[in-house]
Length: 117
Image (cartoon, rainbow, N blue to C red; front, side, top):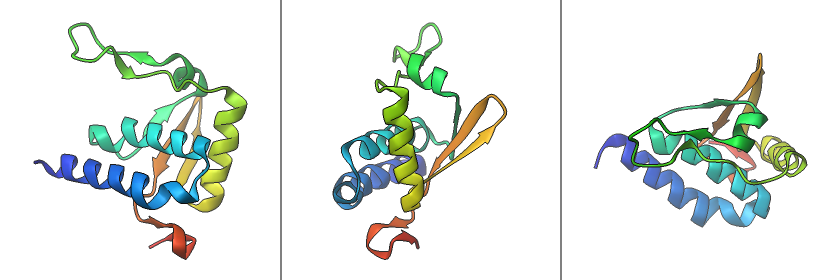
């Protein structure tokens, strides 16, 4: 197993087993989406606009998967409400950068401590 696979597996387990009780259903969905688009692919951050998140990014021709970034499948208002909650808890950072936003999940977030390790 590679380092990226180990980190991704640990992130999935942490989200599902430790963080989930501390997140709303929508917060969990947004966090899972960003983790899938970053840690699962060996990336630290996701750069995208809500339009891209909503429509998705198709995978290149010949790819094993149909999407490079699948559509998020939630209304804008729901997404931004969940994002505000995640930011307030210190789980995720979202920084506007021109036409897109940089999203990063903090893998060292500790819900019991109310912040990062």
